[in-house]
Length: 114
Length: 113
Figure 1 (cartoon, rainbow over the protein chains, first blue to last red):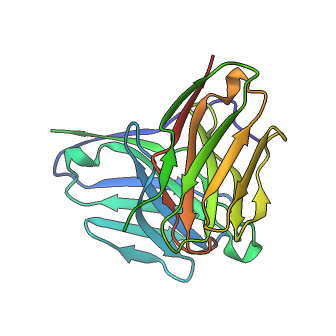
Figure 2 (cartoon, rainbow over the protein chains, first blue to last red):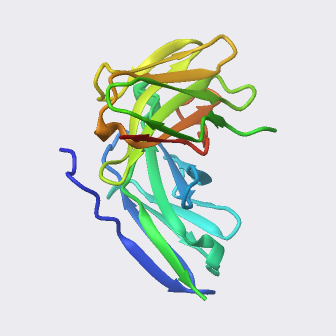
């Protein structure tokens, strides 16, 4: 059912460290996943996506890992910088279900300490 | 290439009023989705439009409606505003939704007093 209120997980890291943000998704039929970064006062910004026929995808300083067996997604940020401080959301989509919507996780607040 | 443009950025309305929000998608994108973001519920799907047709609607009351024009621009309307409608309303455009990337606008911050 719907949660009454959100308890936002937080992750605090030192500048230069690697960060790992985790996400459990709910729909086993989901086949497309996106990570977004949202800074205060802004809309979600696309970071990286992955389709279900892949286990891993790399971008610039970011890597997404997908484990379909346990319905788990992770975002790894290398050499975290203060500008990476934001809320990070995972989103899933069942493109075969023709529902044309993203279902978002609750988000994780990443704080990078200089 | 211009991004997703939402207007206005901020809006203050009184309970009982109605409001119309606008979204201009990225050129060439034909899918426009709307989401409501609140601290309590996070990001919740409102509806999605493609080629002027609503293809999916989220679990929101009938006071929330939308439409899409032939140039893919979209509007959403909320009638009889309630305090609980205060939120950040986000628009996302995509080439065709499904398994293509979605690009979000900066949102419209609606405050109902």
